Structure formats: structure tokens, C-alpha cells
Image 1 (tube, helix red, strand yellow):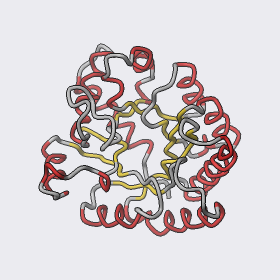
Image 2: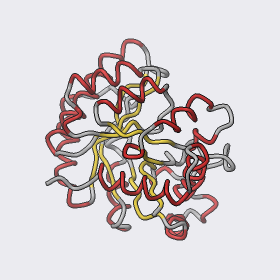
Image 3: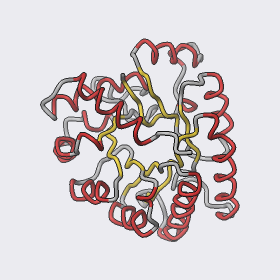
Image 4: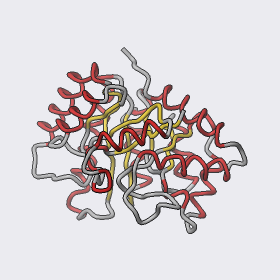
Length: 264
């Protein structure tokens, strides 16, 4: 009943698997992963994600554009393309819009307004197709939640993926019916504040992920990350929350089903 609610299969390092995604998928199956969401970061690579989904038709996918992707585009045209791809591929297990959000850590201040517009466009797409939204936020925590609230993103819900913020931000996200997803970062020794947040998130709003190929959990830290490493995230959460590994699996699996349920 393991789940990986956020990974990038098309970006995995396949060198230790003879450059063969089939071998990674076998590891995923061997680990007992029952639900996996392959998340888009741009439109250029979406056809590759779609081809992966058609080959491994049990996985779920999303469509969207990361906040740090190229802004040398017409954002209205981008919005129209996201909506078109989403509507066309609901039959191919397209269950969410994103990842999108705000990331001011690596962006020039001149791009802040464009990031906000892109995020608002994604929220509109999510509301039209009645699917949740996957939020990436970095160095923009309060504004991210504010925009979600102002644009009634709670109508469709969503997830704060790879959460690294304070309990105050987690609470604000929970108040608008968003889930909190923990990645391998929660296993890092210096992630004390995040580990405290992980103890407090209600059972019915907890998700786990790898964000692979990034942010491999302890004991794989510093190496390429893969979806089957999500078990280490689950183990750490069980320790932090003073519960069993099996309970974390059950909670996160049921929450995955609730959030990414087909909604018409």
C-alpha cells in the first residue's frame, strides 16, 4: 500500500538500471507501491510523461508548468494549452494540475507578477476540470497560500508538495483544505522544525512522496532518488508520529485516493 504522491519518472537517472525504465518500474512493483503520480514541470516534456503512462497504465499523471520554467511565452496561450491537454487526457489517468506555484528563491523580482499570473491560470484550469492542484512554494510561503485562498482553490483542493515550511504555513494550508506532503527532507538530521510539523499534521491530510530524482532520503541522501525510496519517508514519519509503518502506509494510501479521486 505504498504511495509516491509526487515523482518525475521522465527525469530519473537510469544509469544504474541499464538505461531501462522497465527495471526501475520492477523495483517500484517489488516495493509494493500501489499508487504513483508522475508530475509534469513543463509542457515540452508532457508527451514523454504521457507515453510513460500509456505503457504503465496504472500510474497517474499531471500537467502543469513549474514556477521557474521559461517565461518567454504567452501565458494565456500556455493556460489554453494546459487546459486542452488536461481535458484530453483525463482518460489517461490525469488526476491533477501542476506542479505550479511560486518560487522566488531563484527568480528575479521582475518575474514575481508573472509567477502569480501563471499560478492563477493553473488554479483556473484545476477548477474547470475539477481536479486538485499540486503546489510548489519556496521563499513565497505566505503569498502562495493567500493566492490559493483568493482564487478559491479550496473548491478543488490540492497538496503542498515537498513541504518544508513552518507549522503556521501548514495550518494556513490545512485551513483551505490542502494536504501536506512530506519528502525525503523530513529524514534529514537538521530538519528539526519540519519534523515537528510532521508530528502535527492531521492523519486525514498527510501524504508521502519522493520528488525523485531529487532529495533522496536518508540513508540514500546525496544519491539519485527513486520512487521505491518512499519507504524511508514512511518509516521516518512512523517514528516521528509514534505509530507504525503500516499505519502510515494506510493513512497516506487512503488520502491519495481521496485527493486524486476521479470527479466527473
